Image (cartoon, rainbow, N blue to C red; front, side, top):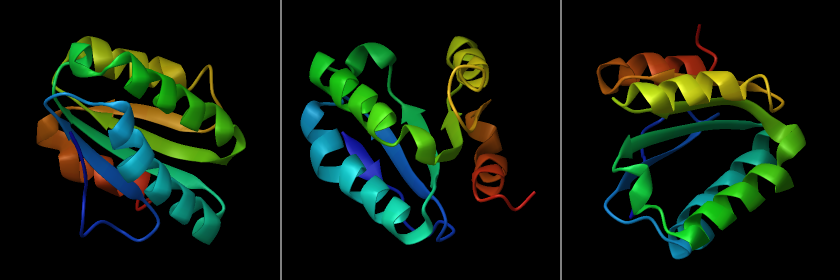
Length: 122
């Protein structure tokens, strides 16, 4: 399930993924919050805390995630993925070369740094 993270800076949207992640999670939780932030700020600063394995994302979740990325391609500003899996952090860092915007991976112990970075505090 994906949970919307509360009490974040107003210029970012953040989520925490636990257990199985489905298409419904993206349709009902992620996409409306992403749209609202883009409507308000005209850019997307995105935080995802992964507390589940990537294998727990259903194919429908992957499809919705990809569609969201493409739909808002020009709006991506900063995105942080928080995970203790080094390969996920490395892939996230590499993603900056493929997509508009900046992408950066952080460890769980660096959550506050990730929030500060995504919100452009530093």
